[in-house]
Image (cartoon, rainbow, N blue to C red; front, side, top):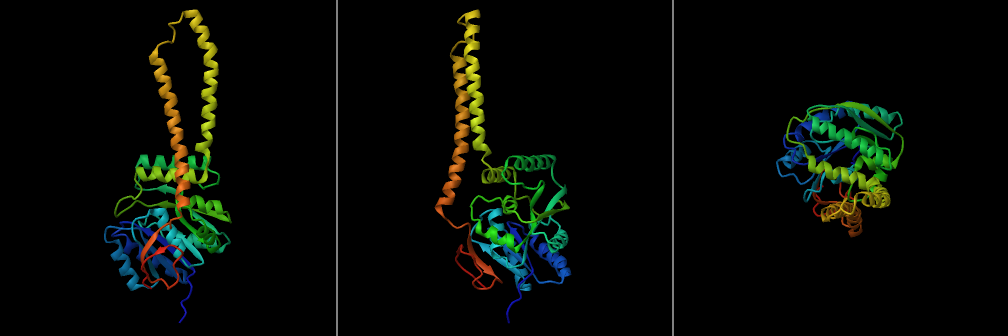
Length: 328
């Protein structure tokens, strides 16, 4: 008997979410069953070191609508989301985190907007519970800086929690850059988009997978992936330094004539100026090197991820990535 194609594919990346996976399946099942339409839950195990995979396998054994993509190692959140999109077969694909901070009930509102004709429905965080002042402030600053300097209009205060029509998904599957920023890529493709507001709940099990170090790297991927601003700012700094040098020559010449050769002299001043200029040079070399490194990543042509095994996925459903062991 031919399997019915699901209308909705819910994609959830999982990394050390023991205790959340079963709760996630229960909540998704409760919400999606109310639609009366076929759905699937694609869980991507991103190299978890706890009992997450065991919980995923238990859910898949109990319900064939639960699909598992098991990575050979940890490849990162954005790559796990990409794999879920690759393996999803629904007419609409919904991205959600496994920690249940994004309430599954919001999916129903997204579905309404999708049926009204929108092709991307993103969730806007009207409130963020359980987060520190520092986390909220840096997140707010991050979204506004990205909005100002990137070449695409990325909605403020949005994460990866969103619904995408299969037309959008097809375009995303063709975009294979390694340093990924899914919410920026979704904005870049265009189509008819709208947002729904929701309250982001506090995490109740486990710990955040985005500490400050990863947030900085994530922000850098967003900037370098969608903006040349760090490169363009070099020319402005060089103009300012050049202008200061041009102005300084006559000013210091006059001051030294008035106050004598001892004014503003000595090796200490020269050393300080050289260190300042050297720091600027090294900083901009670092920025240039980051863009070159990302070019090198693309030139190597390695797959985005390597899959160790899959469960409840039909044979031949794997995209052209490194699949080593498939279990239908």
